[in-house]
Length: 308
Length: 308
Image (tube, rainbow over all chains, first blue to last red; front, side):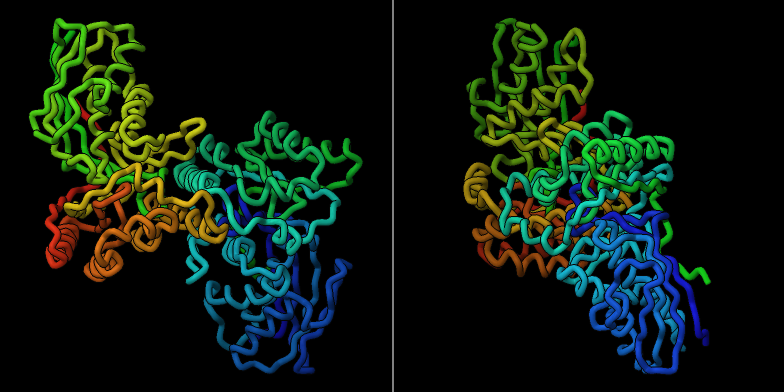
């Protein structure tokens, strides 16, 4: 039985276009590194080596909540140190809390006398995510755990499907330095939507799935439209529609808000296009006096994994 | 230039599960036969050889409206006889009006000095369908014209996608003798729906598309759920939920209302299962003192076609 393990967990794009609460995918980077080490205290001790300002009280820390749930269900009373080297910034809309929760349960699982199957770790990671976001949405946790493009067809019961996608799919991401809170992003959503919007949203999500599975890049692009959350959540982003237009003019297939923002993603057909789109994104925020950082990454088949 | 042509156009299942207004597919049978013959009157003359009670005034007949639209746009003033041998009963929810409109434009197109591409006939067939149903929905017309499983991702602009599906997909259909009107079926729909229902509907349609394109029969079945129209429209069908349960227990992957009803379809994994499910469907209505007819058909790759 191992006493120490290091885990890498990728950032994830959730609410992909029309896939509000339903569709997410894994990036290659950025990603978090978490080391788990058995200690002799019977408690979880947390160390934030990344200076990300994480809560260090195990009852308030996403990763510790998820780890504790898995340990309790496995009847393990050992203590563990959890050492965070986070590169996914909390509040970025890139699945930071999901990455912490997933990395913790994947790492703890590796240190258990009997390992669970990866998919069986999902509910424990979700316990952490729910504590962080205040809502039961799995479109960050599922791709962070399993990699690839993941559809959550249903939440009751949870029904998860890997969606095949073209090999040449890259993602440009910009994370502007603006303060967005996931739970506030939910509060502004309406309880009811026009039937016409609901039909349009379903049509676009169906189009996106059809485009991904049949490598129809044009259809993928035309389908990245969100009628529910994006129009409300992007009001705080300066000239969002202009930025979106600009990315599309420069070769992006489709552009949307990542999670509840403030990050924005563009799906692109090559790393070169993604790099050029990322540059345009950063320039847009610079012109609006907002600092930002960008990432260019292939859509990643791999989710969270043991690295040491 | 030909003077006469005979056309076969298949019935279609629309509103497939969660695909309200968005997803339809073609059957092999039943189907309509329409013969078009050039006459020397410069008018459209209609003959109903099937005794289906079709309106014979060209301004009130779906097929004639569609044919006239195509002729006008093509600058043709010739007259034609349109002779109907319909097997798809009007008001069945199996795309009877769409089949008439599609057959008429496909036939007229064959008799034009310069033929249009099949896809270019879509708007003319839609003119007939709109006149018949009072709404612009394409999930009967598109599969009737093009065959296969068809997603209409968007109506503005119209964006149509062929969805690949497993070879072994069969359909059982029952058409009970109950009077349902398409336009009444629309009137009972709400203008707004709960956001949670809209998300569930989108998730199921995405699941259905993913199931079809990846030949995941279980996922196809789990995704055939409609939150919008079916719960309201099936109130007039005796013990609909019991019938649905019964089909699922007997091997159907998924069961739902076809179009705005009263016909009901089950997707099945073989012709044997579909035949047994069709039998169960007919028995259900017999027990409720309602006569019905059933059809068993493969999901058809072929749409409307010239047969003579």
